[in-house]
Image (cartoon, rainbow, N blue to C red; front, top):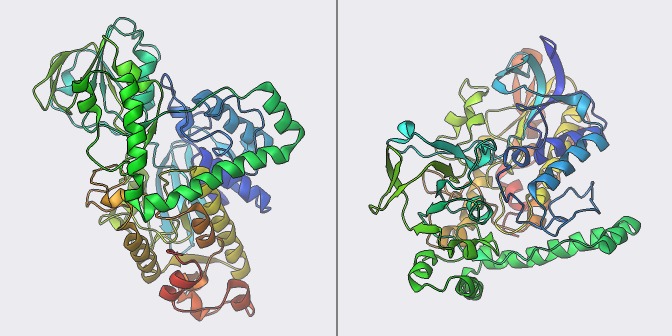
Length: 529
């Protein structure tokens, strides 16, 4: 990287969000951009998570870009290696490699109010950018709980997202801490080879069967010969999930039937009433992420597996002690304890217009206009930002909606001309967030009686989108300049975007009719349509 390279756009991360942003920028005719990646290859979470059994719980044809369909998915639910290969393929097909700076972890990015640009310090050098698109993702930084005695544990310790492939688990006594989406894939994958497996479960998950199968050669040939069949398959998968949203967001009581199906799934594999009692959740299904597995319960029923219905309280030498007093002597501890989702570490490295970090701005909880723009951070956008997560469908749909918004954001800056920046108005951010949180009150994620990683330290759901992917796409179809403040390069003066200030003649029509920011949240992209 050149010592003082300057680019139009800097994208942070090369997972689905970062690569999607790079493809969209190229399709918009923008080639003056870089993708800053801290690792030595693309893939994001699908590069980092390579634990045994790692796979996606969203069907393959829906968990891929609409602009890069893959007729050759080998299974209905693809494994990590196939998804990572897909992302490598996208990188090559869309000629993204010349734009990627590997081994370039962002250490700090600071807004320069005089030059109207971001000054970025990375592990491989410095550069500046007019616009930053942060696509680090919420599942990028593993979270390991602080447990007394962990530092003195004599055995092997690692997180599911940092799997130690050099450590041989055969015959070992292993503690699996956590029972989330990663753990229910790891447990059945390692159970046959370990000597003893002790699963420490703080809260039991709801688990539904994973109806996975190999996609036949005939199906793949059909998709290659007739591309519309791939689109039709994707459309069917999408439509089914759109119809399910109402139960999650407006009528959680309707999920009782799904609970009965989940209990039957458990009963087929778990014959021991005491173990069934341990594994039966006491909250409404959907409140926490619904997990898919047809092998998890059978693995737990094996004689070399113990389930401790309690979290870990301390570690004494090689003994793991649970909060209920249970003890297990182990050789290795595997943490499946999730990620820093509501307290993303990248927020500590972003310094905005007022000299404070994004983490400081989000001290009371994450919030961003349409899940993308934070007040006080001009020309900075995030992909998979606050309240853009999903509880039942593919995040790629949400990412593509945010890419639409990003593309229009860049277009609006081009229309405004000259040295200019857009900063989300605090009132617009607050109004958007108020509507989202109001709608969130009736969802299963807030009313289901559980504590999940969707909630931040204040108990507020800053993670999930309380609606359909169609509604979100409508909400992010275009940028409403009424929701932004325009900052001009001359003397750093700023004017409200709806007042236009020194903006060129004709910008009003190109940008849309100005108006009250709060009203635009309710009209242009009604949150509770």
